[in-house]
Image (tube, rainbow, N blue to C red; front, side):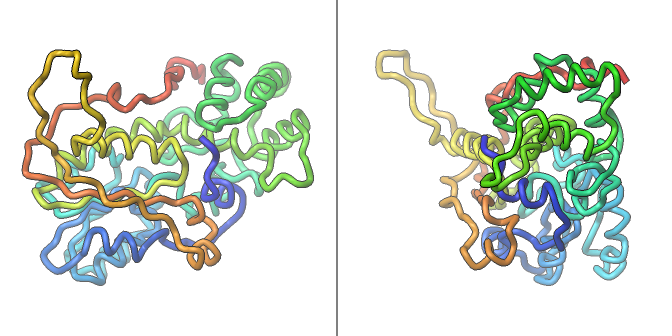
Length: 339
């Protein structure tokens, strides 16, 4: 997985919130009066605002209590057509309160979170090494200061594709024995000192490590996989699923899920016993959509964005587990953190 441009640009500096692929998402879900849509990643409300303007009703979900608090004025102005829920989108079928016409997910960190130095997502402004979207549980500092070097190497290598993962992990293990990492700039500067920086490099040498820590701390890949299964349960026949991703691990999970659920993940060998065909729960996915050059220039976060969408069939939801998604095997967050 290469760190996506959305993660790289947004991972460092402040940016005004601009909904990515907004026109394409609107075309994918066709919001209209009488339709109920789950916005599983409410954030600053960019998608929700557009859905409401088209006359739809929305259930907006966010694990960040700050996002829910900031959306209260939107709830008041929506005339009963907007419900905000503080929770994880992996439980969206529970929060939906019944079958819905569309589920929309915009995966990753929000620009609103990145702009707040106190949240610890950005290394271009100093802040506590936090990164917790839900503001609860083990933080990035807990991980950096307690997880053994071998496990840190796996986290940085698998979730950030950091080629210096081992060197960085060993540096962290040596340094934290005398002075634990507590601030974002402490870690970023230490990484730059360890691996150096080529003036021609487009991104800071700490970018991929910060991305990997954020994904790990928030279990973003596991949450995405669970959310896809929840969307399958929540959508009514003919309902639409639309997911915007920003790097290859996320996109691969969505692509694998839709291929499997639409019966396009490949057949068995002719030499093996034949089994009954599985009824697709999604129709053939739409062609993947990327941002136009115009949008990418206007909103750098959109440069690596991909939209995948598909239509729910009338078939019953299938059972599923995280094992179906081929997620990378990583140490358990709560068992590795000592604080």
